[in-house]
Length: 382
Image 1 (tube, rainbow, N blue to C red):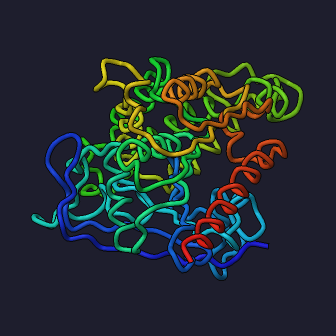
Image 2 (cartoon, helix red, strand yellow):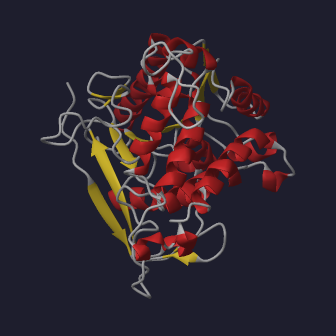
Image 3 (spheres, rainbow, N blue to C red):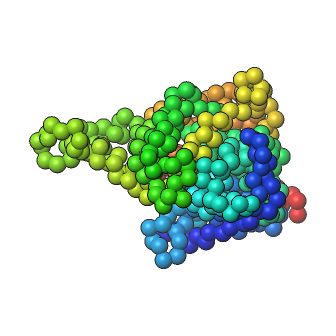
């Protein structure tokens, strides 16, 4: 049974310096919290979201029974990240389209909708914005930062930008940077959006339209990369959509997999912002903590102080286990405390959102350890 979640918003007047130069001010961050902050404020867990998710991590909204948070199977009372023991915080990233300030909002100086003029934001910018929100909440140090996929990149970045403000980093189905294939997929998706006639150079809001065709294609491309070949064959194979006879048409939907992808694209285009898609995929492309260290990941991670859990999935070809092992290797070379689990799961990249018992047990065990550590530290402090 899910609990009732309550969305909140926090406004920031002061400028946030951005990695790409310049800054953004007068912005809002949407967030949610679950559980109770303990007396010494040591049990907070920050959850970072992936591309098309948000601050709504767990629970349901009142009167909306089918509004479960995107990681509701992971976070809540009695779940692996147990909100009876942890104070969990989900934050919607700047530039997103689920409540935090983004391209669909007005520039504070001109009053004009940002559109394509919204500044490019990076993983590092999101982390710094999250740190400001935690300052306001009075949380000096996190028990853990947790994230999957792009959220895992944020957890890794947290350990480098604010090493003293966290005790553990949990990085799931992620990577130290995108390889060329991943950047290529992102670029094809972006081109689908920007070449849509309704895109209008990113200022489509002024024209009262949405580049839905481009968004549909972008989502279809992305969705293919989230699933494994095994899952696609198991769910769809070569099943035809209607009956047993081929239509021999280049235009009609023939196969079930085509129908599924079109459905996913249609749904996505109805709620996700096109400029947000461009911003977030570019942030994915830019993330590379080793870049300023001559490509040496071990050197880049030398400032990290947290304990680490990394989890990967055997059929995830978008963020393959080898990429997690790169992080593990570099952390071990720095003599850091590292646990690593490689789960033999058939679901591809989406496995990090699903209920594989081995995966859930790994997460539960690790967070049990964090909870015990937190309780012990509180008793010693008392």
